Image (cartoon, rainbow, N blue to C red; front, side):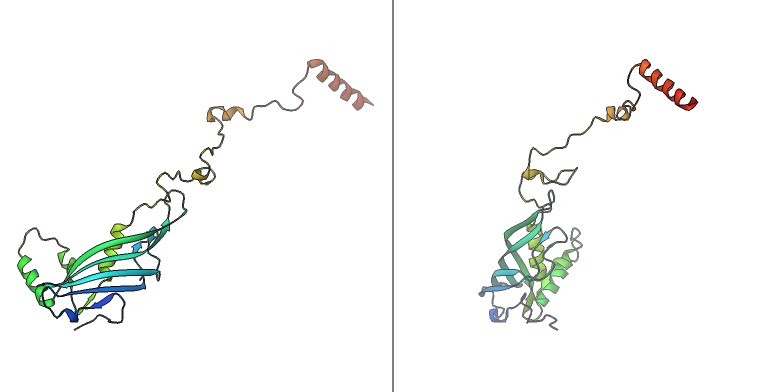
Length: 214
């Protein structure tokens, strides 16, 4: 039973190939990018931004071989200075979508293989009727092509740890820091009235005494 929605722009119809090995069809499509094409909270393709696909659909014995190129815009944030990062991305991908009966034969042949990857079943893509869903393949291709730590420029200096200023805008930026070894001496300055000679202090005390007697 076909569970794919043929109205979805990332669902493609292969019925024109007619399961004839060697049959070829080229497809061009421009659509709005779905959500989830990227690394969450780091970098990715903005949802509903323009996404252009150039596909080559080729019928082979076991299914349909899909080879394509996706072109789109990527946005993110520099991990050093938090400035916006934006660039165009071209990503290539290729995947074989098995006919349902071919996939069953493929799994039967590999069922006894000792070194079979446990995730191999999840990584196998199948046609549903004449349709296939490109979204999971596209998502994997885009994510693998994205930088894990995007930067606005290779030599970005990041932010000042004291005030948060962007250091690339002012490479000479710095703060004068007091030597912590002298911090204990900062409160030891002379108190008012402690300076001066003993004669002045004595005269002051005598004057106060005379005022009290009067």
